[in-house]
Image (cartoon, rainbow, N blue to C red; front, top):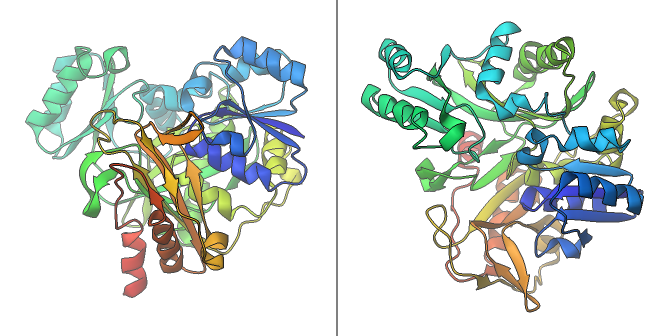
Length: 426
């Protein structure tokens, strides 16, 4: 089987790495990939979706897996399916679960799926009125895609009003913020839950938790994610059952009933309040860096899983996961997330410890190959992933690998998975 992975980040590298372990996968293509993905397959420099579909057809590529949200919201799946090609991901209509926060919130309300109280509006006056009616903090969200940065948690009514007015004026996020959602703040703890879906059936993956803030102790600005771990001890069988019954199953059934069956990865960002799950948001693809800690836990061949999901045949497959733990630590460039940094050569020490070589690996993200050297050229450069029989062992392996990686200005958090470790020490 030949497989194409669309995207260029650590998420796509991790998917490619999982595919490499599947003996049924003979070749992997990346569009466009990054400076390290040629270690796994072949990079294809085609931006246009129509042209990419034609290339897939000409090369006899059997399956395409879409990583990022932008191509999905842009309709790449519809184009490929229109040419009779097999592709894993939601249609443009179904991708509105992520593409429009207003669409998503109205869908949740229509299908009685638990979420925070909210309004959608284009009116500053209406936004201000609702903000005043809520206790602080208040959540203000731009409707459209903002690369993970369109959500403001305002500590005061004044901050919330400022965020709302800047979004609605176009100052903050351009067209993506011309409509907004204002909602109550839910006080609990967050979980990331992913389901592989085929339109009717789904498989829930082990729950993960990521770390959005730049600095230790969850301080500093929000980022695309500075690390993640899975599975998290913050969930038990009872909570899994509540999430499946109240959120995942009604979403899959509701999308089908609305004429937009959901195929691909449903990413539920959840808030757990007093043991009850609420939906903060949906994304329509794997999270990054959550994907990097979930892929190594997959025991079922990755190519088979994605192929069955793209074929509407998930019910034919028994999906298995390892009983190990995975922890991923993002190594970022010097000026992330404020501004770009100077390219820096990446040096990885030779790993002499056999156990570390077996239980840790690197997923590359913001890297380029320049004059034969692998260079850090993006914000989030790579993620060091450690595996273990416990979260502590997985964490230790991840950080040992971090110590083997060098580039000018590298930065990373030192406390990834601290919540889980604190629980294990109690």
